[in-house]
Length: 382
Ligand SMILES: O=c1[nH]cnc2c1ncn2[C@@H]1O[C@H](CO)[C@@H](O)[C@H]1O
Ligand SMILES: [Zn+2]
Image (cartoon, rainbow, N blue to C red; front, side):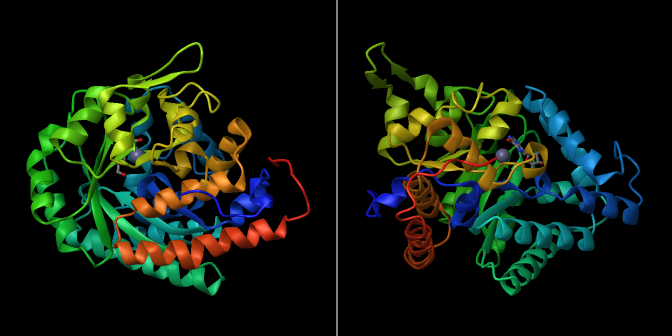
């Protein structure tokens, strides 16, 4: 979609403007976004004594440092502590409500937040009770955010863990709660050794039901994983998908050649849920400036910007955009492009996506662009 914005939309946005423009988030893990103080309080309530520290500030630092491992497997080990305090109805309601409020305060107007219900059964909740508690928390958080003047809508994706064997059951759960807060399905967890084709029965089931799913692929593992996710499993979107860059060659003279898979991904407008900071932490990308998102955006792939795990990465969607603005000089217009890409790729019905684009996203960007009209180009803070 080409820009119709005023020249001020071509200015580099400030950190404050980035926070205030309407944003869309498609890839955010509920168990990767807890507030450190909530973890400490819930741990005390449920008697979990495994936390590395009970000082909230130190705990936040611990998560970021532990996740900064260069390995997806070690990165994922940190989730034991967040899942430990998400085993009761009260804990799940609170974590989901916090999440909605935090995203809304960051200027997110639509989010799809994912979690794996099978990881929240240790204290006797059933899968259905887990989904109902999370939904209740999101409705509560949406209402609190609205009262604070921040409108947000949240749908959930139910994740099945790729090393486990409950994916069909979770897919059925997602289908049962469709239109009741759940908008799709995902598989996550360590990629190497756990190809998505182990879960074909779940994907086939979802396709029979005309339901939607995304697959974490091409993060720790290369092109075969992306190929399987698309061509064997039929994924609607790719979680990360950064390794698609391996199928693109850039010659010395700047000429670009796409392989068949990269061409397919671009031609079919397959949404890529990119999460820059997370990729730096797990070693999937070397730096912000060298992150494949720069080239993929230039080549007009259907790229979206996401947080993955706000706690482990010490980030927010605004922070992710700030990093990209610093690395690539993105303008307000680029941010709008990423945002509309994300909204087009959401799993809610077409008419609802269109309404958010026309009634919330475009006017929101226009307002910020108009505000800086005449001010000229401004630097990025932070
Ligand atoms: O970037 C990632 N790649 C693969 N799996 C992940 C990533 N981030 C989180 N999870 C996994 O998804 C589960 C459900 O939310 C988390 O518990 C974590 O194990
Ligand atoms: Zn993820």
